[in-house]
Length: 390
Image (cartoon, rainbow, N blue to C red; front, side):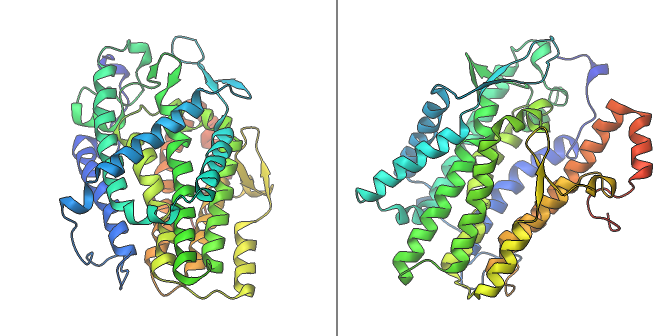
């Protein structure tokens, strides 16, 4: 365990906040799954019913979920087009990571295509979202417990800056070990972009197929949501090496926060717009679709780490223009769902709160790293994300 003086300040409201989030996040995910298929589809209303054990538990869902994880793990272990080095660790070493996430996406697409051509009822996946979300949540809890136990015997140099407070609830949530590995298999790096992101686009595709079966063809709104989000996931996996410089990899331990987020929250919550459109079809004129495409495709440039930022000049106006780009993109994903319901805009609301919180964490780390130089930058660029507003 790290000495008391080296521990980072507690985040997320400490142990009490961590315990609350471990209950609130799964409850929110199931709430969204239930209200998306309800008639009123009210974000702030109660779901039409509370599912019983028979609606949540399915041995077939468990088998399908474990098969999915096993398949993506097998793709992870395949020869990679490149091996990249991560950031320097406390012991001055650097871990090596396979860059083959896009390859996993392509192989998954090929397998799904072969399955569908052979008669695989992909649309039936939409009827299993509740039990799949349940087993994904259960997996996240069990996995996080195993990670916590593993971290108890890890050397001090392997611990994350913030996950070794000594409080078991807080450390279970945030994660004690920075880079837990089984031989060369990096658990956090694998979960960060593979099963959740690829699972997200697969769920979207299943919803599109189901809509085609119900209505004869997918709607323009469904096509847009699928296309935008597939482009996002494909870009993230093509530039997979960029994740090695993110806070998730370089700073946060691997505990329930990331395990649940990667394995359950991303695929079952980020597919909310497509879920909404299946049960609440929305008319979309071609002219409006063109405007939405323009919003989603604002001209961008790549940084050295592969992240996409709005065109030059924004760094002189806001300190995190990439976050502003993320929010504009989130708006474009929601607009195909119309403006009659708040529910499809949950992602935009959630992402705004997430990025404001993450920006605050970024600011603290930059201040510690750059000191007076960062204060001077903040003086020259007073706005954080949105020019003249925040």
